[in-house]
Length: 350
Image 1 (cartoon, rainbow, N blue to C red):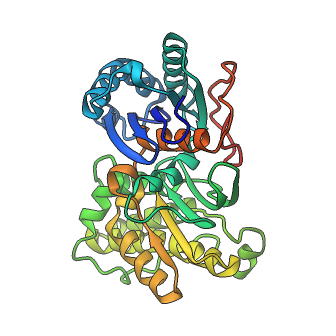
Image 2: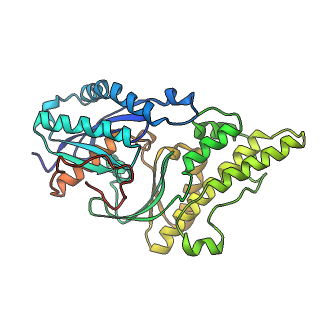
Image 3: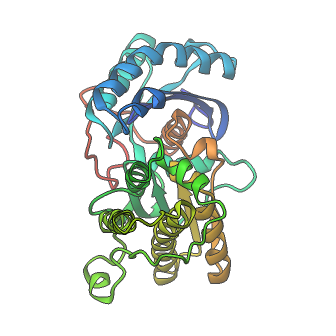
């Protein structure tokens, strides 16, 4: 196997996107994603059984499309990498099963990797400015809101904090629903906030009071914020007053962004790490990127944001992390590994 620049096929099926990526070392050759989001929209959120079925149907065509995009044959692949967790158990099982089948059929090694660490690995595919460590990583998606300290991508990742209830993406979906906006909520809130006043309503910032910071310095909580928005809207409607959609959306978004960025920048400052990496689908939120850039610049922190196509769940980031493990001399995963929906971020490879 080529350990200097291995050709790795990565499979990601942790939620509702079937992602297949192919990399050669740190060079991105293909990144193909089949999303089942439209199938979930009618339910207002991801349905695990629907996601698993969609992965089953999409994996074959997605692998074929990735091979065509990369202009390589399946037999050219040096190794297979796959997300083993965290994520939806049924969805993960589909990807794990497919990856094992490929590895056995091709007689190639398999690397079972951590989905969250994969989001950090996506930044390796930026040829212009390679990832430096240590770095603080803020990962924000529909299922995860995590703050990591990455000292070594393949050997030392520490969980600084995470959400203790709703993830930020979940909060966007739930608030969008109560405002009568369609799923997924993130882009809908972003659009609704155009022209709104982010200071119109002072919604609460979860876990930012002095007493909260003692036990939850880098943790997040958005459940109370979601409830506060619901109560505010209910009071307006009960009084027969119109609900200013743009102001509510902008004020809610500002509360989420304020907490996310404040805690991430604080982690960089307090730990002496001058780098902050953003990852996850919620990074597509325009206000999050804007505020993160402003506050990072003010604090002298270098902000890194991978291309948006590599921020959402994708197979390229999994392939990139697999390639890094190979180049660092790590042994392949044993075939006995399974899908682990609660895989801790400290377990980079299974």
